[in-house]
Length: 301
Image (cartoon, rainbow, N blue to C red; front, side, top):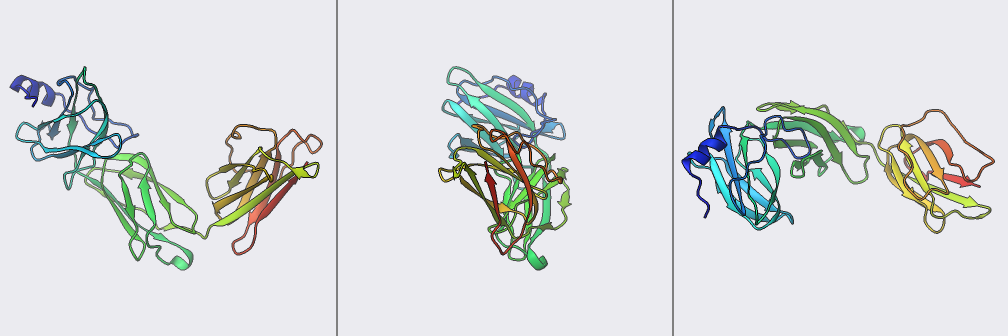
């Protein structure tokens, strides 16, 4: 076992900083410190003092639990770990879910000091047609793999133990269009978001022919006014079907000669058809998708 001396503990806890959700800014986190060989060493503070009772779990790259420990009076825990990438997560109830990535090397050492902060929470409700609650909708905070929840029978949901950050909350439910809302999470606070209204999803079937033959291999993009763009590759029959689009106006662009994804673009409310006489140039169309009936767009070259 690796034992920390009083000097090492003092050095660690004298330089504490915070922990941010993975992928989000980390305003409180200090630079990593090498204190152990083949061991991940973490120190924790609350309000500038060593924090006891902080429960920590370490996951290996495959998602398996590699170790669990609770800080004592010194506020420090150590995990003997095999070489590779590991993720440490604070699991103490009432505290923010603090996740950090670490690369552990048998020839080196890894350590860090983090601040334990009160959890933030997000509450709301997912609704569908007729303002009915949507049960079983999957919610996820962008940038945090484990910040997920399912809506209850009445559509209500709660995401707990969130780190203070600005991010986006995504929701998905079978047969309905996805939704996204911006959130600003504060420590020790509960953010109540407006109802996330999901509409019935529709599909769009695109067909492309060139000289009467299927136009296979080109890229086609659907840009709905009220949703995220999607791109698909035409199959051998010159066809592609978009699923999960919201009803309403959609902008469609096709490039029969393109071998890579089309450049991203926003919804264009103006109907455009470019280069009618040049089959090597993209085609564009605008149509309105309707639930309950087939939605199709055909391109001919």
